[in-house]
Image 1: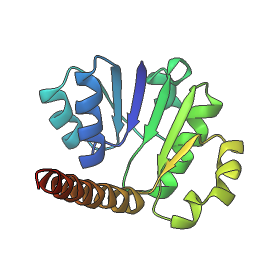
Image 2: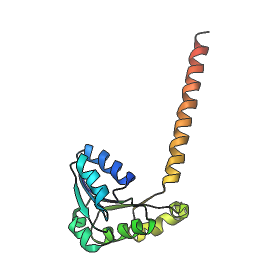
Image 3: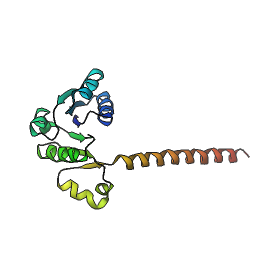
Image 4: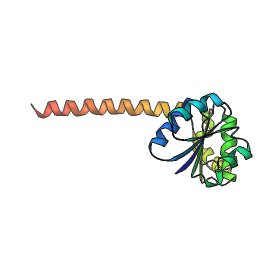
Length: 153
């Protein structure tokens, strides 16, 4: 897949690392050279210095050929704008990281799809979900162990 990641901070860095390890073609865009140098030093990805809200920058990243554009900067406004522009420029799918829990409700899902954002990611909700999964696994393991002990009686 041809994937563009807007934002080379911690989330963008780790996302690029995981996806490049899966042999995807990755382009990372950021306004700051320093995080791009960090990405470039350890990964085989294309890095572009520029704003992901710039049409020229998105064109330079070949947004029209992107299977996926993921906007994970620290700014919700930049992420939403990037995803909308990317979709209008031809990206097949877009994902934007947001800070507003209201945006990720089922009621608002269709609205964001209509403006060009396929998925919204709200990190706090994802973290809570992962914690619940961990707790569920722990409880399931305890139940299985208790059943095993009972079966030996």
